[in-house]
Image (cartoon, one colour):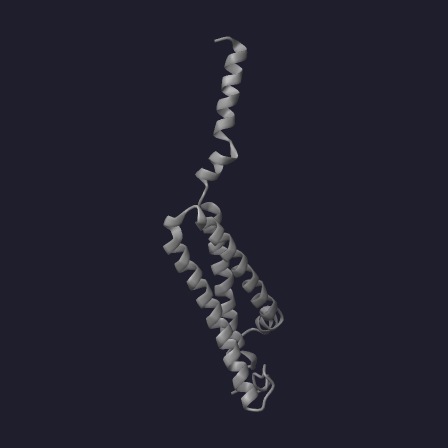
Length: 151
């Protein structure tokens, strides 16, 4: 084997080890697992913000909650809700496309998708229930009581 043939053979071997197909096979779970973790983190953060947002004592000067936390939740809750919904929709499309070629992952992915939608549904129902309760009692839909009242 001459030097030129040897260099060509080494180059081909290096190309085989770093080809996109080989890298995709090696790291095939990195993107689905990472995106799943990110979506669930966003949804759990939304659920936590919903808990604080719909708790009347959180908005009063009782309970020891910091004012900056009230301001942050009051400012970013609805944009975060829309962001979480968009992430969940995009993640569903990605996961369905990913599962097409991997049917053995269907039960796990179906469970994850159902769990994610359940978390979002709990947050939205909790938010809607509290707002409807305020409206039926003749208050503004987002009423949380007198913020200066200490109980």
